[in-house]
Image 1 (cartoon, rainbow, N blue to C red):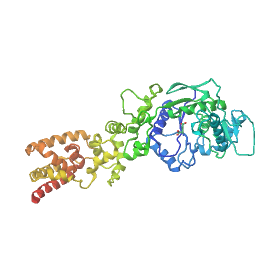
Image 2: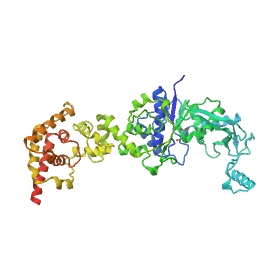
Image 3: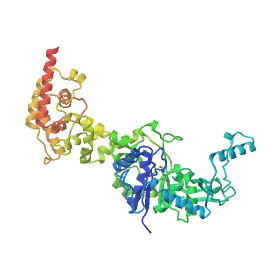
Image 4: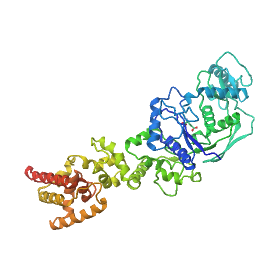
Length: 506
Ligand code: GLU
């Protein structure tokens, strides 16, 4: 058997929707799992709504997610030139025309010279015949008078598929990878336009089938909002004498039981998750649940998903999208799965947004991330937690300072500045593991506080505020280690000074 070929076929009318990302993920996963091929095809037939910016945004989002494609365009200007290209539908119009004319010749489709007015007239006539108003005309479909005339006129024509079969008892069926066997009565279908009279672009069902067929796609995996299109597509495969691919229709991301998730409900563009500081695999760990699960496991790297993924664990029920849950998954992903190295690289742009210019390889970066990775649900929050490490002077919470920097703590803060200079090691990448250094420093700090007869409960918060400007931070020893002996001492002395000045002010 030849290797599976799967595709993701976005229409570039906006940024990549999280539902689209989920669909891309399942296709990608099966391609990677099976050693098959993942094709990216851009369905840019809606000239009025397609934008170049959207093409670029979709590619950027897929790359950010790490869903790399084997065939397809590399950017909006470069078609990629793979063996089944072009991969932009707008560049394949000659092919659609050729296939449509072939279907006319084989009797599966026909040239229809009707105008929209002709259709209107027929609709009104039928409404009159039934004695109802046009908007109450249900269950009627326009049957073109050209359907069985093999006419070639010198007039523009649409090409239509002969699908209308009111007398048919046939059930069009397929074994869906996700939904099981689906049967749809053939008599529910209508003749469908394949190519309009005034536009060379194909209609969706036709372009999709011509491409899936000519691109040798073996698995068509998409959202279950497309189930309704599949019977017509099956008729098209039959008309072309082509083998059917395997279809799989994945559950929808819902706002509630009956409404699809929309822009109004929150962040639905993958780019928004990137901007907010989600990790790609954190987001994918949540999105994969819309169709697949593995026991109670919640956190998956892409490599793990490829290892575990299987169609037997795929579920069909639509799921309600929970923005909070998505964030919690991302937080757990940051805390438990992401490596400190990866977080260090990814947090840099978020530090830059705070005007903290920290380069990759900065001597304090890795240690800084180590101390706060359990405290952040996004990279933006991580950057916030790390802010005081990289500012020349921390931004002091003044309300807390008014409470905590009092004359009676000044001497203790000075004494701890001396301690910091002596006891806090300078760390670099060759230093002992952070946890070991932290245990040693905690020990030394405890002994120092005992020797100075200081109570951690009393002095802890002033020291915390002195080092970070904040009241909720990692533990004191961790902060001192990241800041190093000199910066720690400087901040403690600044705070001692403020504490004495507080006496002068009162
Ligand atoms: N362009 C279609 C969409 O974005 C593709 C559907 C399909 O995968 O067949 O919904």
